[in-house]
Image 1: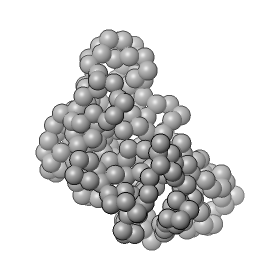
Image 2: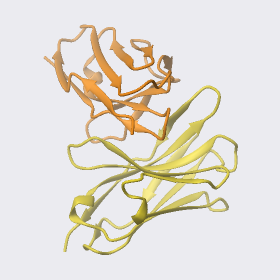
Image 3: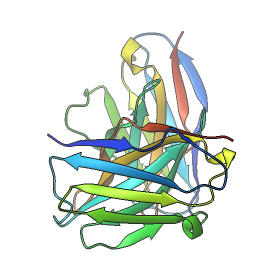
Image 4: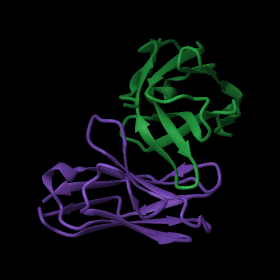
Length: 122
Length: 106
């Protein structure tokens, strides 16, 4: 079955760089239509898409954050890594990775990781 | 950017009630509209994709309708386990989530 799990530091200091890893199983990121995306949710707030990478290694970023974000994949390890530079307390949020399936039938996030809470504080 | 506006922002209904949530797009998104359920403390879960297709494993009391700019998610008979926040998402151009609708039991 398809699973995803986020890993990374629970606490980062302001101005530091955050590195998060999404480790997945049950699908291949080389299969046409498959993508992995990062989404975050600040406490009590709605969902904000950050970035995604597709089967063809194309990368897409939220334009409001793209200067701070880098997404990459390691297909041999079934991992997707997101880095976010210059972290600020307003970036405190739960960060999710999710599988995005894009084909003739759908363009949606059909599987999600449990999320990881990242707190930015000195 | 395409803006997604959900209404109401919250609602309270009794078990067995029919509940409808509305999502409006700021421009035509065809049927590139998904609905997610997020129970407290959990990750979101896909309910409906492409406006009206029920995701595998989702109870049939959930249904979606709409195209263009106006969409609805309906729970035909509200159950206690449906207490959650519901989000719409457009994937027509880039992607955007709605601000969420919190559903509670009266």
